[in-house]
Image 1 (cartoon, one colour):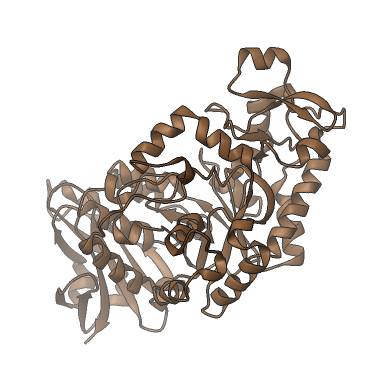
Image 2: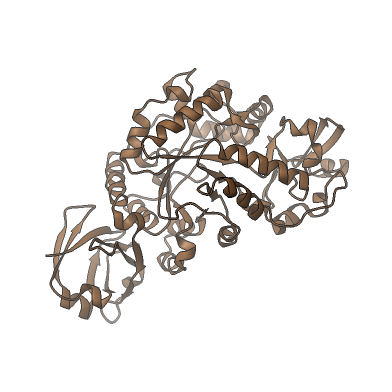
Length: 498
């Protein structure tokens, strides 16, 4: 199992990077300035979204889908057909795309990352393949099959194809709540042959990188398969169906060969804990994101009372390629407060390319370039200070504790919007983080561990601004720390005895 500390991860889109470097650029042409910058910012992991080989059917589907084209026009006004490269999740083969220079170019880039202490994360889209994946010809039994009646009733969820064993109606990849993805075909995890084939794919991926992000990982849970597909998930070739969970078997097989290989699950529907229990090292924490976006301070606090065995294996984010840009949905001030809560709590810290510069236009994964935007200087400066804060040893691997807040006086109602917590490394380094996650000025008293703050004078130096305060240790231990903060105020204090 990998060392479970609190690493920082950034998601990059190599298609966009390739466009910026040059029209025929490969991964060998990525300038050294990129890994240099990421290492200097304190990142531990780089996720390259979509390096695998895709095919002409995926690109054709992306160009012909009218709903998707309307999204392209919003993300990239004036886009051309050449900009539509197809979804990186319509994977035709788990080998590095020829446009990127193939496996050899990725191996060389990985070595450059390693030389700067960066580890490489790649994708697995386990739920489905591209329409033109070789298995359609060689192993059509690996897919969910439908009938002519299914195709007539749900033409958006099924497709008739010529397979290596004759014509067949195959299901598009989907989850139970949305229509199928028309550039994909649904794999059947009740088929033992498919399960072994996907484990072999995972072992191949593990030879190329240090960890894998598993797209929509909860779709492979037996109960989700049953809810989505019912009897259609019985193997089409008559093989005995397998109903055991896939992930424990697959993760064990990979980590038997690569004990340090990391598994990150994209997961929703409050199934994070279940996937952690099935072997994932980290799982998306969408619930915290939703509560922050709703401005639900009590809900955020309740979420942060979960056990550290759960929290430390979450991946927390304010945006990614599936979510809107944080700068577009979190207003100024509230954005910074949400970021302090997200990234200064005990979890993997997950950032998205463009987030640090305050980009506002949500990109499409079907496009090879992004719209031009002017960086937000104030947000960039904030994120620079936040990343510096995340380099601190007590924040990277120390002890985190959520503190108790109480009303500053009878009738004081704003105290309930405060979130206050500490980090310490046991060697004297201590950080005190205070956030008023509310729309009005607020006040509270914070209860501090009495044995740790008693005696002497404490200096509190804000790492996000110029504020410095001195407080008496005896008073802090007896009454607690009094806070009076503006709406959406956020401060991270380095606490030292003077």
